[in-house]
Length: 332
Image (cartoon, rainbow, N blue to C red; front, side):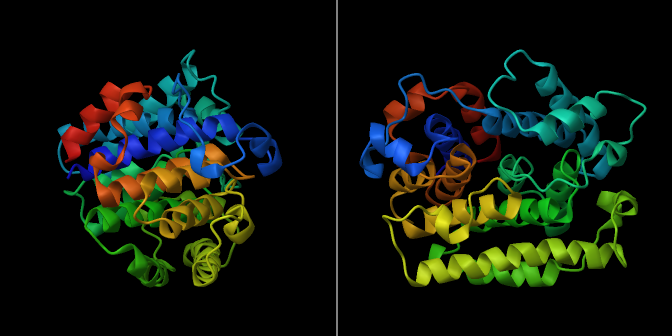
């Protein structure tokens, strides 16, 4: 089935299709390609910072797990190194997010603990566009999955909504890879969000909450989960009256922030649960953060269906193909 391989290939394919349409209105995209169903993967299928950072996280996870059971310190050290390597790389020229750039610059200085480097005011989608690998590692228990997803977010994006959306995105990837039917997924995610609302895990996050403003860490984190629950409401409303021809960003947001990227990426998959290629095209043919939306849609679709759903000619062309396949094989 190759669920991990399917998710990693899908996110890179969606990223590469959306790279061309990001920063364009639907009208501007339509002037070049009138039919969203025919949106092509470019001949030179280059990815953006979304896939680059996913691979950086994947490398860090691989190193961490080679050293034993996943713990906060064991995760933070190699992932921090990989993020800083990405920040320094000459290949980091694919319209990277400002939060990631600023936070990684701080992470490059040993004087900063990661909680000090984190941008606690940012809930940009850079946190959850890269989180899929955590949902694909079957050996992680529920607390490790949640803690690792939130910690990798907080290395750059320390806003409670970024943490919650990253956690929810990783959980959605895991549930789809486990075979939860797409139609039943929103209810599963809502139950998870409600159960997680006031769970601040100090073991994983340390004193990050000391930089938040609110009555308690639990109360502040609850606001982040409430943002995710709101987008789940919008998602269910859109699915109750599906419109494949409408810009999906009109229903669940443009995706520049974490909860919207999660909601709209998932919407495009759930509108077309049995046609992953059409789903990533629908996500990329949008007015918002098209590469991140299609990246997440591809991860969801690939996690559910496995690697065989992606056209072979697309897989052959995708940038970083060998490394994507290597991690897929590792986690399948």
